[in-house]
Length: 222
Image (cartoon, rainbow, N blue to C red; front, side):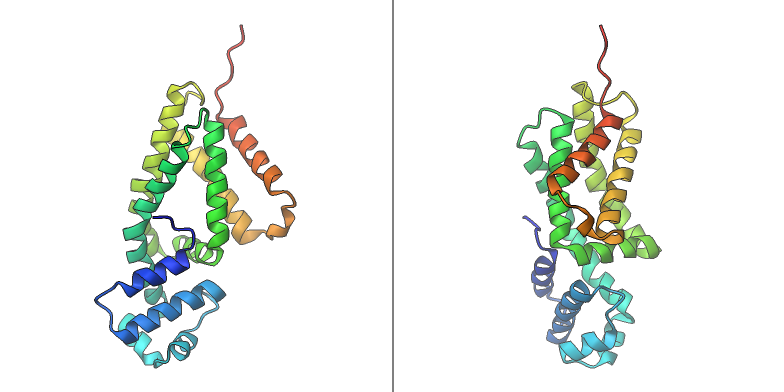
């Protein structure tokens, strides 16, 4: 399953729920659309209720508050679809038989940048919730560890065995890589104005060069 647009996929997923009444279904679908369009912080429960054609009290009765409404939408969706989506992404990248880690990481970054472009608002919501809501972070940690970390560790070990990466523990190498990539994606899509990127390809090559300068195994001199 390809998740190029999380908004459409989340709406489709919510419609499959047999636990929701028609009113709840309408409420959830409306909330997803408004959250994605305006951002979580700029969306009020009254606006969701009015657009969905229900009373604001219905939101408080079923979910308690706007934060719980978001969690009720996002967490079940991510728990069901994230593992398959991540596995599919890595399988697709590795099926191209990248001969070096540089080739692999270039395609991975290109893939993730495109994905976040398609889902920028939802990406911003998720990052903010992880940073500021301990409950949400605790729910996300197992998904992160069991999927993203697991797949990246396998790739790193593979390229270390080929002599492509520096000889340091894979856990440290992974932490260095994710610290940079996470910081780059968050700063690019949440902090800075993307207008500063004049040449997408040149930007990608500079990011890859920066990573590889730190992770590439030095060539032995003879």
